Image 1 (cartoon, rainbow, N blue to C red):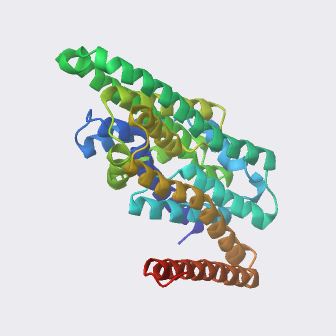
Image 2: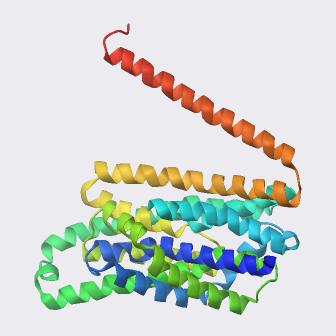
Length: 359
């Protein structure tokens, strides 16, 4: 099979996985609040919104295609390696139902390639990392403040819940804000799939946005159900006003970032907003803490995994350096083995102490 065709297949399959992750980020609040009761309808709406948003994502595509590593290094083979490193990480996360930032895994994969070439646009990379830290915190803060206001308003304005007309208005509002966020998802995240293709000059910008958007929307309907459940119902329950606040917060922040060409973790932004709403309403519950802990672990691990995968693929297929790869694998096995050994020792000491045999 021609390597160019292989690059297209991997990129568009990756776009489908991005659509799956974006479903939870964009329509999780609407689904969790009950504005949309059927999962398929939620995935269908976010797919359409993401497709339209993708058509406006050229600035972020430019960043992914040439803003992290020099464009001259991105050949067809390198584009495939970038996409493989990111796709592997994202597909695994979707399979276990954890909302994952596609921006993190793609930038991580780009960094792995850049390390192999010993060439990175460090200043651009620093800006991206800084936004990854700041934007979710801002989302949490905005959502927390909005949540406090909603908590004071809802008990006083009882007509919002009792009057059928107002309930329909709120339902329409949360769906509309979800569509805004799905638009933001397409605008920011389509670059993660097609950016390497544009960087390698395998496809024009217009074609990249069109086909990337199509497969993004398709992925929402095919792969998105597990992630939708996690973000919509397993973190915290949302009222219609709360769901609108979450989607408005996430969507507006991501659209602003997209205008400046910055790939940001949409799922982190939305999940942070959901947690902000939950914290303003009743503090951190045990269920939310457990889900949040699991998601944070994946967020931290995902870019590291994609760095390692893409760097390893570069060593094998581009540099033909199996010796360095062997050393990497050996060090990884030794590290994992040491961590596991320490865990077993700690567990054994705890068991001894609990059994009354310790000092």
